[in-house]
Amino acid sequence: MPDFRAYCQPPEREPSVIRLSADESRHLVAVNRAKPGDTVVAFDGRGNEWICELAADPKPEAALKVRFRQQAKPLPYEITLGQALPKGPFMDAIVRKATELGAARLVPLESERTVVHLDGDRTERKIEKWQLAAVEAAKQCGNPFVPEILPLQTAAAFMEASRGYDLKLIASLRPGAKSLKGVLAAYAAANGRPPRKVLWLVGPEGDFTPAELSLSQSTGFESITLGPLVLRCETAAVYALSVLSYELQNAGP
Image 1 (cartoon, rainbow, N blue to C red):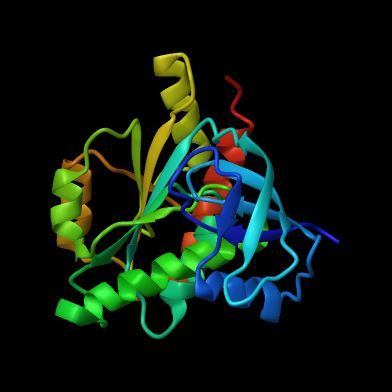
Image 2: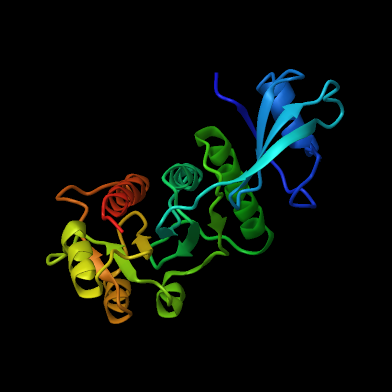
């Protein structure tokens, strides 16, 4: 059986004891049925992991006796997913899958064809919910890095402000969209190395509008085909991250 995992934010880097929050304690003891003496890997979502032992009395808040700390090695690349808000509960699933696939951050976007519109307190509650979904997914898959969920913004504003990336990609069904392998090969040939910071944009149901696609082209995005079939937006996000992660993992130094 794999070790239990718990998310925490210790006040110091080298604690001797870590006390979990009430929610984390309940999840560890009541849901996962961890028992005193079990090994628990506590992590802070930024690569720090503490190998611990669950103390004898886990109530009301679980106490973890730290054996040692270890620093997880980050991936050699950094992927940001800009995702236009889908209908229904699919954003939660996208956040979870993006965490499992090692995305560094996720940016929820409102596009011209976005059906779901959030504002005020509802936006903040959604961001908190998605961040919690990322933490839960990181615990389940063993990812020591929890992706950052950025504030909601319009797709156009995000495109215009997107700087600092080696490569900017947008999933597209338009004629002339390139293959991912070809774009990555061209970048490596021109720069002598694969890209390290990559941005993927995935549209909503019905895709980005022609105006948004035109803006993406003028702001330096490469249109990438995800194949001949029309994918649901949540499928497109998982497909795009999976293929990109695979290619970057096998691109060499």
